[in-house]
Length: 326
Length: 77
Image 1 (spheres, chains in turn cyan, purple):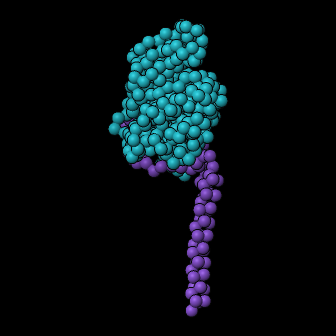
Image 2 (cartoon, rainbow over the protein chains, first blue to last red; image 1 turned 90 degrees about the horizontal axis):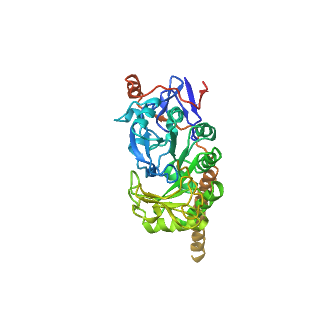
Image 3 (cartoon, one colour; image 1 turned 90 degrees about the vertical axis):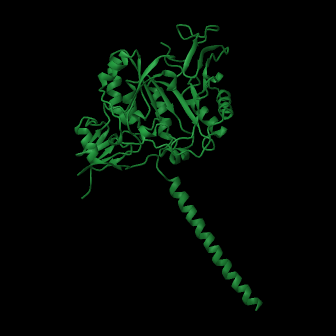
């Protein structure tokens, strides 16, 4: 019998006949690797773009969002573990939606973009690629919400049909990646650089977990890396941890820690630093980095006011605000 | 009597030092193998309920779409 090697992600699983890769959904059947969740999403929703979170990409627009079973990460705090930590054959709900049908549905629902999200879309790579190509042909945009544990060549190819990514950097610490997520840090950083090189709009999210990755020195190092490798205009989102899945033993992140982190990020020189999961906080809004004008006001995932000019400029000092606004 | 007790203590001390040295060697060995770990894990896979998977593929609930980025690996006989 023939084993099959999967070169999609750095796990590089070698899969015997009848077994799945580490992600649970790429299966060796008869000596061929099968993408068992192709065209079979288990979650379909219409979300605000801000929920991804993407704050500098088509703000306030609804985005048609799909996810499947499986994931190549196994984070102990996963908030979508019922989806991500199961194989397709274990799911109660599986919809049938081929790429053209997803695009038609998205259009019917008034969405101008499709997000591949909830579980890590890396594991339904082929479905993303075909759907994103169909969406492109129909004049729609594609958003990739990921933890970016993917090999460089597959990512380069996929970037041709992607417009934006929210990439979650779990920690700036390889040991954290190994112990909490069963992966490594370096491929994630490499992937972020690839996104930038390929012209995909990048926003970085970072979930701050008490005692595990809330060290301000580590946060500072991460922000410096983002500034140097991706640019100071890269939006950076601090997210608040809530006890989940196999990490029920830690408390939620205190707002003060998120504010300290944000101060470090601004101090390092990042221009757009947000705090998510804290509805009503002033750090949900976008400010002009030159004169401090509030150019987009948000409450939760809702855009309350957008003062950007048609060209994406600050209305008072005409400073261009980095992003994809139309 | 005093000399014999002194010798006895020395032997116990040596045994204790031996245990400490063994522990240090274990810790050093562990650290050496950990720091040498590669950037990528190789060869992971999972057993699945193949019958359930085949059944759901046959019913159309799951797909048999061929995946990209894969290659056959011959298993040595």
